[in-house]
Length: 119
Image 1 (cartoon, helix red, strand yellow):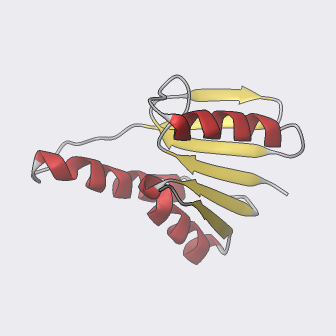
Image 2: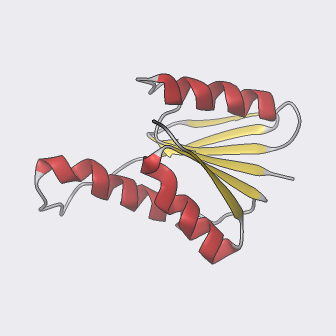
């Protein structure tokens, strides 16, 4: 079994509890099975069962109001997470930023997905 985690936060780019949660959850799961984390950023790390890949955002061509950039950026990264190809049995989506990516993984790759709901 392989787990794929989608997150907007992962070290060194953590600004809240969600990033801390993903960091520790991925490290603990990797003790048991292969884990891949796809996140927002430029991270690239492989250590035993844990592989982390960051996805940068190219805002060139954005003509939307500034307050919508994070929304459209999250959608774009969800597409990028999927267009990279998925070989996992479970996709864990962490926060709303990655929810669309999880839906696309389920629809396009037949992967089971879970969403961590935040208050």
